[in-house]
Amino acid sequence: MAVLVVADHDNVALKDNTHKTVTAALALSSEVDVLVAGQSVDGVATQAARITGVRKVLSAESDALGKQIAEAMSGAVMPLMASYDAVLVPATSVGKNFAPRIAALLDVAPISEIIEVVDAGTFVRPIYAGNALETVNSADAKKVITVRATAFKAAEETGSAPIEAVDPGPGAPRTRFVADEIVKSDRPELAAAKIVVSGGRAMGSAEEFHRVIEPLADKLGAAVGASRAAVDAGYAPNDYQVGQTGKVVAPQLYIAIGISGAIQHLAGMKDSKVIVAINKDADAPIFQVADYGLVADYKAAVPDLMEALTAAGL
Amino acid sequence: MRAQGFISLARTTYGDEQAVRPMKILVPVKRVIDYNVKARVKSDQSGVDLANVKMSMNPFCEIAVEEAIRIKEKGGATEIVAVSIGPIQAQETIRTALAMGADRGLLIQTDADPEPLEVAKLLKAVALAEEPGLILMGKQAIDGDNNAVGQMLSALLDWPQATFASKIELDGAVVRVTREVDGGLQTLELDLPAVVTADLRLNEPRYASLPNIMKAKKKTIDIKTVDDFGGLAAGHLKVARVTEPPKRVAGVKVENAADLVAKLKTEAGVL
Ligand SMILES: Cc1cc2nc3c(=O)[nH]c(=O)nc-3n(C[C@H](O)[C@H](O)[C@H](O)COP(=O)(O)OP(=O)(O)OC[C@H]3O[C@@H](n4cnc5c(N)ncnc54)[C@H](O)[C@@H]3O)c2cc1C
Ligand SMILES: Nc1ncnc2c1ncn2[C@@H]1O[C@H](COP(=O)(O)O)[C@@H](O)[C@H]1O
Image (cartoon, rainbow over all chains, first blue to last red; front, side, top):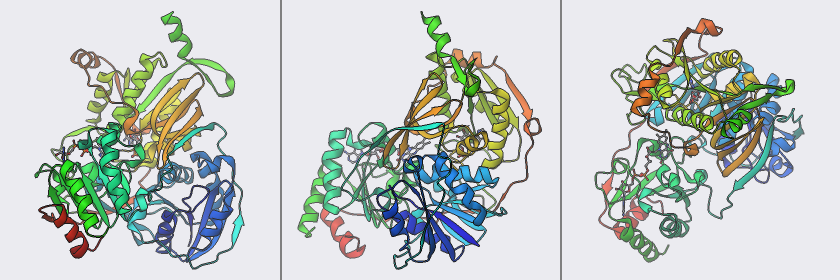
């Protein structure tokens, strides 16, 4: 059985989600190849070739692939599927965007956001905002799967697979790229960070969010997250949203400040190793999942926390 | 002046034929567990217990309906058709869309809980019959959390796709869509007809007013079978079991920030 993994990258660097998806793929088969689809991706392909366990790297380049437009991505993968029994894609906004297309075109059922490979045809995936786990068995000859990367360990980089150029496919003739608004940040990436500090509606304004959440995150070398309420109100950008319909994170430490703990928020962070909640309402549902709860007004608690961290030599 | 604007905006050219037709928007809506209800797994692990549970329109579908209505209110569409595939009770979901402002409903009645692939195939058949200029739908149904049908429908129809929309601008024969992506926002321009899926921040759906709820009772809902739209194939996936996720137990309350830092350092070892 041969498995294709589609790499997560930004044309410059390969992302860790790829290494984690390779681990999921290796649980299906030892014949795992990686496709790097983008624009000017020599460097990304070279890095992908180092992932332990990868047999070969395929590289496809075009303008539309450089923008990872869904129609172009599925168009590049489809002809390759003649040689593969499964394609595994990290469940990022890019992966979720094109993977179901491949399933439709192959006339198979997509399997979304798996968190476990039971055997080559059986997978576990969360449903109902993570309030239930579904074990599904697929009868399809070819499998199209997106992978929740936080559920898998990253494969190492000890390999040296060959790299081969492949046809980039037809592009996206009726879809045109207009603009990107990508905010570059020096902080670690939310989905891959070891520590995440998130703020909620309690912040009350964007200024307060910056003033309270960001210095704490920077002190801890953490990524910044937010609840939907905080994003909707404009306190934080959309890509900070953690939850059922935002990003799923599973850091070593998740600190929720002024977040009530709605099921949709919990769906995105309850697999964190250690959860800390700071909330002035002792009955807030977030305390039901928190390892350490501090019932306090954040306005006093966060400055105290900064001080205590400094005192502890951090 | 206003009437004129209405007519010119409501006209859309289709593909190569350059024919001018009124623009219809098709909105697929799904009946799901209400988002405020916590799903409970059945003790025999056969699924989630939906008996006596409040059901509502999937929140993302509501956002799609709202957007279609706003487009129509601005003169960008002539008709909004809400379609649902599901049990007879899904009529209520369609009725909600009609009360918000959709014009007509279509229920493809089935008690089988069709997979995204089958839903996409049925919706394709509906699209070919209705010939909408735009299909506006939810990005994800909050029961199965598949996030798949829109993308699959786009692929099957070979129409352009834009998922996770936070802004939609119709402009003649194209639509510009701003999408919420992992690093921020991306804007794409698609030729119509196209498939667009709604994200949370596209709009805030209205509540239906009482007069509109009354009016909606008179709007038509056609009830059809799956066989009217090509039938339903056997499912590709077998659910072996549905289980509860591992439970997190509530931890301890700490006294103050110093106590917290001490515990994170020594007990939890995460600092
Ligand atoms: C379809 C759908 C999808 C959704 N997806 C997501 C998602 O992906 N992610 C997500 O987060 N939400 C999501 N939601 C929204 C979710 O249901 C909640 O509305 C949201 O998470 C609430 O955000 P919050 O906790 O910041 O706000 P609130 O629930 O208002 O909580 C604010 C908290 O701050 C506390 N507080 C107030 N002042 C202070 C103070 N001075 N000091 C300390 N504490 C204070 C309060 O006690 C309260 O607990 C979704 C909803 C729907 C319908
Ligand atoms: N049974 C259904 N009837 C109508 N529309 C549906 C149905 N299932 C899914 N959809 C549409 O597809 C979107 C995405 O659903 P999903 O891919 O299942 O997460 C939903 O928001 C609906 O717009």
